[in-house]
Amino acid sequence: MQTQTIETPGGRFRVRLDGPSQAPVLVFSNSLGTTLEMWDAQAEHFAQTHRVLRYDTRGHGGSVVSQGPYSLEQLGGDVLALLDALGIAKASFCGISMGGLTGLWLGVHAGERLSHLVVCNSAAKIGTAEGWQTRSALVREKGAAAMAELAASSPGRWFTEPFIAAQPARVATSQGWIAGIAPEGYAACCDALAQADLREAIATIRVPTLLIAGASDPVTTVADAQAMQRAIAGARLAEVPASHLSNLEAPAAFDDALAAFLATGA
Image 1: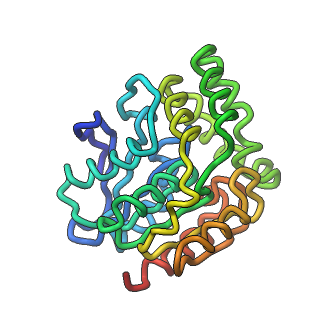
Image 2: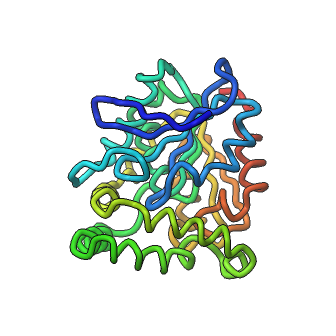
């Protein structure tokens, strides 16, 4: 199935649906600086058992680029608006990095819409407000040149050195995603991350939750996942041999952990 555009009260979103129309819905949410294509391998795998919904986060890819700043509430609200527009009452949700933080917001504020929550390579608070504000300001000042610089430096944040050496084509593809993001959309999502802090709120999550952590992730560490596990009642933790974009670097281990969790009752 081809990508399509869906209008919601929050804006215009590029989405893609794959898999049987009557199957349970699984939503994938991308990380900062990527597009829904980051989930290609997972979509192919899970479309055998699920109706897979992918979307470009606001300001990314083919989704609307409105003036920032954005907020985590907006990012979570966008998911709910897409579910409403598609007539989906309940879905499993899997988000990575910024997408994982979006998932935590949904777990706190709209848990009744989720059957499973999977938070990958993320944290209840990612980085520091100052760090995100500095990056946001730089991107707004330098525009496309800043995105090119971020693309050049992204492999070291996203992947291990052995993966970078062994998979140059995959790395280059990921660099192309971030280089193509509209500067305002990227900066506005940095604004959302600067203000996002769910460290206390996640204790209220009652949705069955899986946390996936990359053993070599320098951005959102295994310790971050362990902290979330302690806070969320009954949360499970799976560690995979990867850095920050674990679904790209270790797809087999990632898919196995996700499939085993989705097979559990909710």
